[in-house]
Image (cartoon, rainbow, N blue to C red; front, side, top):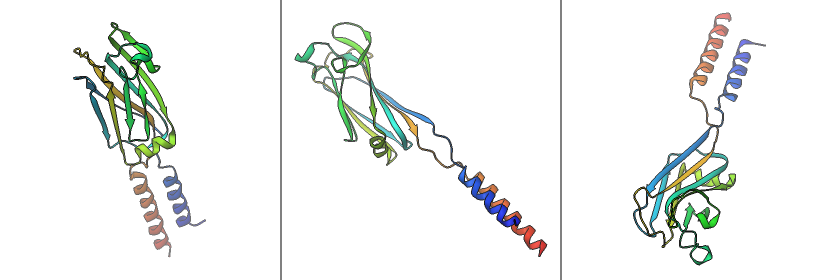
Length: 183
């Protein structure tokens, strides 16, 4: 087999293996609760594309009373991730209580799985835009009350830097130089 063919095969093999492994990425932001029924905008810009399911987690501390069906909707959080994934979260909706401070003051967390196809659509423009709205009865505001949103997922493989391509071009150039000298 000629040196040129060997060099071309080497470059093709290098190019085929020049993708990085999938990495787990986490995008998270926290905002203070400052008013009843507050709307929070969580904009994550320049995110990596998703390669699978995502874990979407809301953690909050504030006036999230547990009062049964009477006020469950008013003592909760509604969320909307780019109109592709929506729902309700809070102590009355299956959240885990982290710190039961008082009847009115709870710190809690709740996670949801976003399907791979939906997450791929959400990250296709390299942004994740999510809106979180406190219920109207989340109205007793204490210092340190907050809402946090986090997305955790496996990022799609991306090509490695061009160094492998440069090595391949160097090998190709070397092969052509040797071929020319041989002729």
